[in-house]
Image: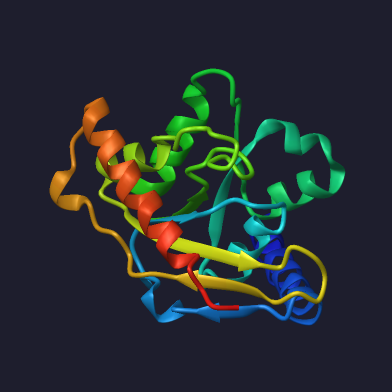
Length: 201
């Protein structure tokens, strides 16, 4: 079954890549910064439904996405979730199952992607940065790969996917990070992402 998934991932990635190249004239920057091995948390700004696929097709390795469970109600998105082994999260409460799955994936040196804003345009809506990324980085030692996504608001407007230098918090690793430390690391990560969105279009 896993072999079938791998084949489907190649097909789907290729199709989405071609689509984004033609329709959004996608340009990828800083791809050489992405760690080639070890656990990685991909972290980007979240503007639209286009953002997760953009990371999937440019990440350079298999990435599992954390996604709200409501997305599985859509048949196409459910199919993508199946192919890319999405980790579904119940957003309104502490989802222990998703927490354990993500920790296990990172401890197995896999890659996971999530958006610190928690929802599309979270910062513009006045919502605070979520501390999930900081928690996983501080408890597993996984590197955080910041991604700034700019443009592509409509078809045929170029979209940029800008990968920065990975952030390493392994020197601060702890089983129980304090709220103060989580907030501090979350701000560092989000500041880096925002800096990566400053691209001249």
